Image 1 (spheres, one colour):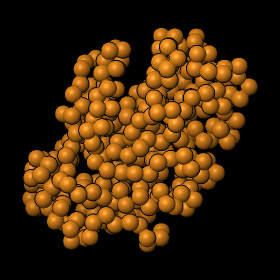
Image 2 (tube, rainbow, N blue to C red; image 1 turned 90 degrees about the vertical axis):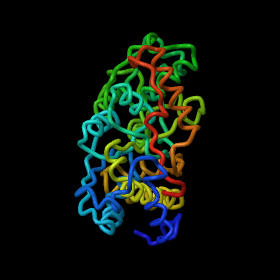
Image 3 (cartoon, helix red, strand yellow; image 1 turned 180 degrees about the vertical axis):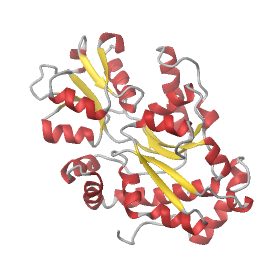
Image 4 (cartoon, helix red, strand yellow; image 1 turned 60 degrees about the horizontal axis):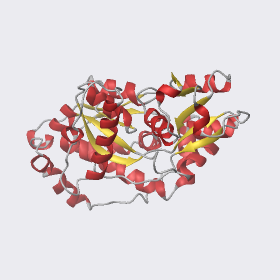
Length: 329
């Protein structure tokens, strides 16, 4: 790993910021001051979460946390967001990265979690086979459209349909995780598929998939979020901030080392570097706290899902936003 990763704060300043975190965030005294640290930090990953894949490979979080006194980091892989947040809500993991939609379903289900940080979402696309007669979103009426239920692709599908005056009632929703959707897409068992990178890039490269809508259309774009167990954020804010700081460094480094990131991601995941390169060429690399803009976007999503009857109750997204101290990561 190159040693030119950017540092947003000097080490001494970071230490002072982290020690002040508990009081500023209103979540209690930092773990170090309490004399309490977790024996292990458990992080959920997906193959599409390249930054976490890189963090795992380079062990930067392990090194940072050992300096604090945390002895182990456990990595748990999930195929997509909703199962990860189920594990997070059940206390089986402490932190994970997902798109915009899984947190809404999780909050509606009273899961014990908080928004910890924000980053741009991977690019998504609504794909059809290269020989398909479907040319536009309007042509999807009555067609079988696959996406992972409760995932960010679920929301992208709804917004794409709405842009053409359609709703989920106008299509045949087919709820499939990426691996199953890949088989259905290549086997001709679905008409269209909404998915995120790198699966989007793989479908283009290997199967000649054709894009009829993607998230370069700002009406469809969204953010992704690092979600944490509320109990973990409350008990160990110093540890959580240290993890987020390392993720932020890797994110900023990745934006200026895309080719190297593609090679590292290919080695770690088995997905070819060409697909990763295509995904990273259109990706945005930034990282930071959850802002009022993010809260507004998530609130609009939650309100829309409630109005459509997709979730059973109204939500106040701001209720589950974790607020670290200024400059904590």
